[in-house]
Amino acid sequence: MKYLFLLYDRPEGESPEPGSEDWMATLGAYQAADAAMVEAGVMIDCAPLQSVETATTVRIRNGETLLTDGPAAEIKEQLGGYALVDCANLDEALKWAATIPAALHGSVEVRPILEIS
Image 1: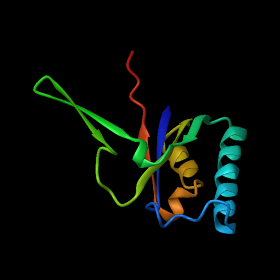
Image 2: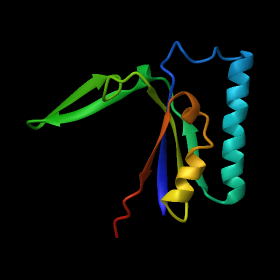
Image 3: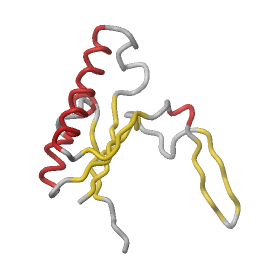
């Protein structure tokens, strides 16, 4: 079964400064988690997202397309990336989600992919 991990991390301004020791350690932890999932054969794809300032939200209301700069919701933690995995079951997916550093400072939302035939 495929699962999408939505990686929410610390709000901007609370994250380590790029290039700092804490940032390098966090980057290494992400790389280690990714490598472990690749080695186990569960990783399909993963990537970080650009900052929320680059987001555009699209809504259709009464036949009119409305575009809003920014994310769909105002939240403290920010969606920072995703991982798409293929695991035997939810328990295995949750085990892998717990290895992702975003779980330490933010959260990892685990969502099963709805397979439509």
